[in-house]
Image (tube, rainbow, N blue to C red; front, side):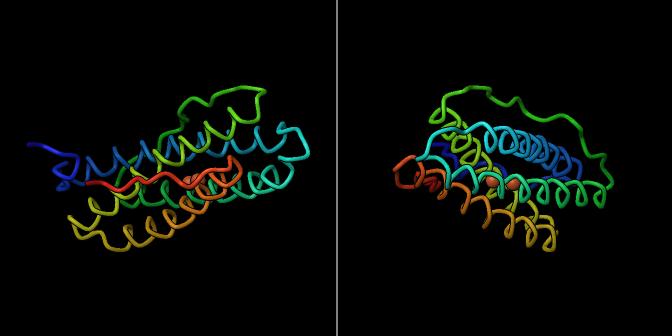
Length: 156
Ligand SMILES: [Fe+2]
Ligand SMILES: [Fe+2]
């Protein structure tokens, strides 16, 4: 029976470029969401997380630059369109939207590391591992602010 672990991991350079452009669209989305949410989160209980979100915004920008650099290195053209950002004035909905996006991002980058390694692009894989480490920190920050344990994203 097919499971998620059977997802094809051998990709062409063109497919890798396409997948990295999907990652870039998520990074742009993250930059925008963190810029907006960090400024509009209201309420004493959210002040610490608002400061964290402001830091995340800068980290997401640096991820976008790294991904765009590798797309260019692979002979592709970095895209310029973010995934849509949920606009809401409800603090918990903002944190939930961010957490959902971080979960999607973590799943995607775990797959991307495998794809890069399958075609011998170890340096790109290394950079994505470092991004992945920061995305997991973001995930933990958000889950903690929501009073939850970080979700288990293990692929079985
Ligand atoms: Fe990121
Ligand atoms: Fe993130």
